Length: 190
Image (cartoon, rainbow, N blue to C red):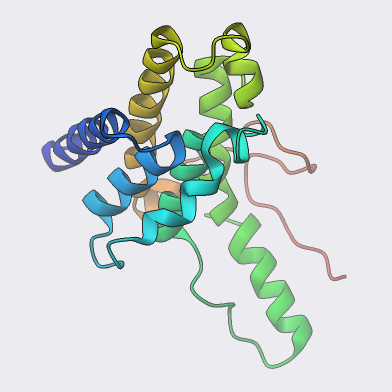
């Protein structure tokens, strides 16, 4: 890995880890570290968008807040700031689909996060990841477990945030809810 990328990765991981010790929740830890380290041009409190994702969305137990914080931060780099141009509504829709699905396709980048996370940690749902601590939520063992997930997830997200457009072309979809192949897909007119 390029020295600059490795330094950014280590810095973001350390910051996310320190955030947890400072009292940030899982989503905040990752989002604040990644946004501060890699997207400093955003307002300093942008990470607050991740607060509600702690504990799988307000302790509901759905998608892990660390994973959602990573998606938010990766979106700050690779997300769309506007829809593509087109002469007609259909042109815009077609261009939008290509931007999301085709080569390189933005969804390829974001699809990496939950697939990596599930492979690495067994689940993406907070309730599944933390099931053994259901009756002792605030215990030290649970906190240390989540701190490692936070640190690990921040590191993986940095690698995605630093991808070039050319590098994203090499990405392949993992598990998806739609029928798409790993290569380019053609978008049909609706």
